Image 1 (cartoon, rainbow, N blue to C red):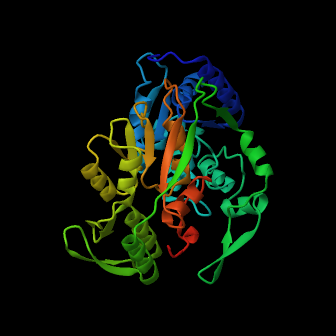
Image 2: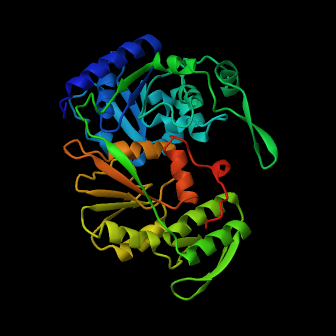
Image 3: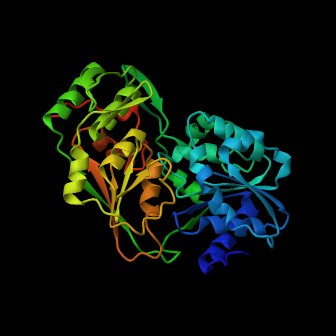
Length: 400
């Protein structure tokens, strides 16, 4: 092999082989940087009747798999991103590895991606990989396993599964009572563990920790007034930094909460155009408390925020929470600052673990810039608990 596996990878691959040879499916739940990728290849190589392996992953993770492939391996590997699944022929593969498989866990209805993967994988043994099988709710496990006939949960659909393993619940949203499917019986975790193998950073000899540090930013009176007006009326007119009149209209709850969120950081988007509002509270806070040096990394969710940050910071490194959320090497960073967070609970948890450098020596602080009661604080409250922030969680609170 091109890379010599570490002892813990050999050990975990043997555990996975034992499970998959017995059940036809195995879930390797491994922390980022713990070595899941090479371990999954060891598993494929250890299956006697497997010669052609399909690996589905995210586009930016393809190279991470390919670097472990060498000519001396028994199997041939086709490594591609999930978006290509519909173009593939199921007869071309003996075994399928699904990286970041929690992305298949939508419920109560399966996503289009899950349906496409099921066409490919139904009669195949599969290996699921993720930092955790459970992101928003244990209910997400069903459709991750639904893609294969070796599904440990032998139910026709999610609703039958939830009838057995779920706890009935409902919630009133916009005056309507909606059934909720995120609550499950505690025993479900035990069932998931029966086909799971766990790999931690400690197994890999990584003993560092990333800790969250919350910094609350005080918005100036103009920004508060704009925030409150937009929140109440869903429309606002203002002069941007170029003295142009901008009319921002929020015709949906999604548009309103994303506009309020980006407004905190000094920008808004309207009709595919980005506008600088002129408020620099977060930027001024960073400069005052952390400076502008090469050992500062700043991550933001919105494209237009990153353009604004690049104008004001000449030395700090600017990252995207979408493109750079996973696999970022921050060994150079003294401070890692989250200017604005995306809405994914999974990304929040994985980002904190991925930023730890295996050769580092210090505990890395993840600094979140929040505004009390505003969207940023609401997003953090949800994602820090592994929940995805959505419209139902959005609370309209007037800033004072």
